[in-house]
Amino acid sequence: ASLLPWPRSRSLDELLARLPCVGAADEIVHELSRAKAVVVGGPAGCGKSTVVPQALLDATLRRHQPHGGGGARLVLVACPSLGAAKAGAAHAAALRGEPVGESVGWRHMFEGEMPRAPAA
Image (cartoon, rainbow, N blue to C red; front, side):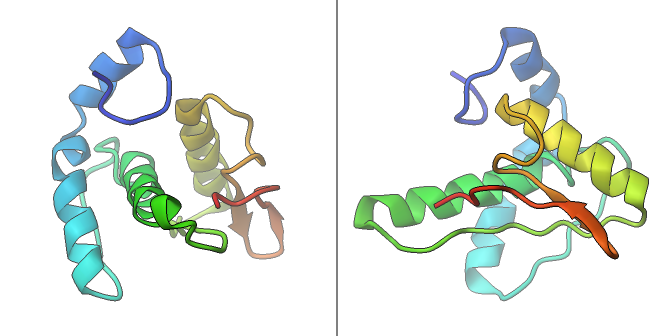
């Protein structure tokens, strides 16, 4: 079974399984259900900018879809630079098997490419 619910290659699942944040994603989702914000820290490449936001988005969708829960869902990730914002968005979109601008976007200062259709 896949670690995350969208279709990906087996090699990508094997790569994701080694990221430390995959094991912590459920705990982070739970903590965010009890608090208004959660700060996630970790070394570069642990999955905090790609795996965690997608786990949060998927948890929100699972919670609201069965009830027809209205409105768009957005997960925001703070990045230190334009390059980090673009790279993080590209990586997150690739994990979902879609281009940047579909459900994953980025914004830095006055530049950006917002998602056409935020997850509903």
